[in-house]
Amino acid sequence: MPADAVRPPHFEQPLLQTPFHARARALSQVDSFIPWAGYTTVDVFTHVEQEYFAIRNASTLYDLTPMVKYRITGRGGSAYLNRLVTRDVGKLKIDRVAYCVWCNDAGHLIDDGTVFRFGENEYRLCTAERQIDWLLDSAVGFEVDVTEITEEVAALALQGPTSFAVLKAAGLAGIERLRPFEIGRFSIATQPVTVSRTGFTGDLGYEIWMVPGSAEVVWDALMVAGRSRGIRAIGSQALNVARIEAGFISPKIDFLSAERTIRIGRERSPLELGLAWLVDFDKGHFTGRRALLEESRRGVRRRLVGLDVEGNKPAHNALLYAQRSGKHEIGFVTSATWSPTCKRNIALAMVDAPHFAVGGILWADIYLNRELVWERRMARSRVVERPFFAPDRRRATPPADF
Image 1 (cartoon, rainbow, N blue to C red):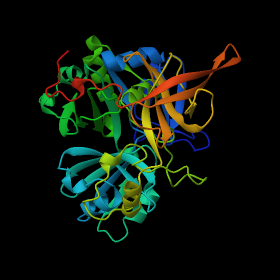
Image 2 (image 1 turned 180 degrees about the vertical axis):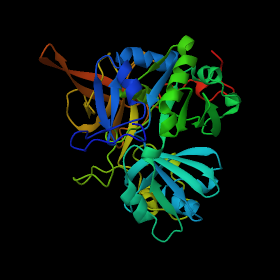
Image 3 (image 1 turned 180 degrees about the horizontal axis):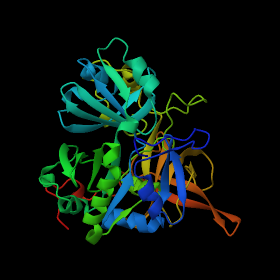
Image 4 (image 1 turned 120 degrees about the horizontal axis):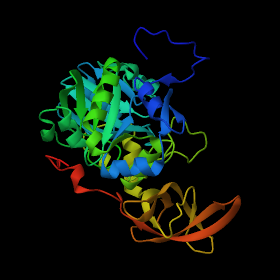
């Protein structure tokens, strides 16, 4: 929405439109939009299959603007973040990005996100959902200022094997030197942008950050630069297939924030989600440290694992059993898809101990709707390492110029 436009009353326009909305609306062929953090975003533009294969074989644009963004500044910024999140932010260098999670005192996950360090005392924290209350409460006693800046920053994810070639064609001199999780400053069609080599697809890719006034100019320039390299806009459904292949977790799908759960036992810890590598017990105190230390000592009672499922029918929401007979329930599937690239039926699942060991055999109770008739199948499943798909090109520096 232009800066000088008058926003209609909230009851007439309950969801915000991103600065890329007009471009997305023009390309939408099925009129499939969904809400995300108060914005309306595209779920599917044309077909999920077409959009997915563009991620893995060409390049894609995904509107990241609804990602909730917080500016964290002040002399106490580093100390504040180190108390907030479980990994050591003190090791994060300027112009670098790190994935992180933060917990409550019980060691249960509040949310995950990415932290960007732009200067000695300047950070940006990006999350999928709004967390301002938790962030402000955690800031008490620190010389730090936390401000939500979601509407001040527009963002695009440019992902896929030809994404580097698209940026090079768009005139980003030096983009070939940008390493994974590094930040660079460039211009696209004379518009200043910040580019981070990050993404949610597990493939070669970049995220491009800009002021909202530059959004349409940048979109158009990237579309022109990528025309000969198969660029296309994608929605959330195609991105979801790619992120499952990459083994990435998603809030409200693979875990719920401990601040929003109602029933006891629905919370999850980083150790249960397979994120122990994000927990640094040696950096000093952080929220949830004592509880996580105790959990680490006694061992987790459940863990999120990857599954190879027999057949080609995704195990959406399937219950898991230790025997084919359907006795002794031991877990459930949180995310599932058929992987077109891996040619595997894959899933992420929360499995009880001791059944989460790699190589273990489980049985997924899958229900299929065939022309309004439900069929039940017990599919043999094997616990495997994730990610399911991790191409070398995602880390190659310089990337291949397709």
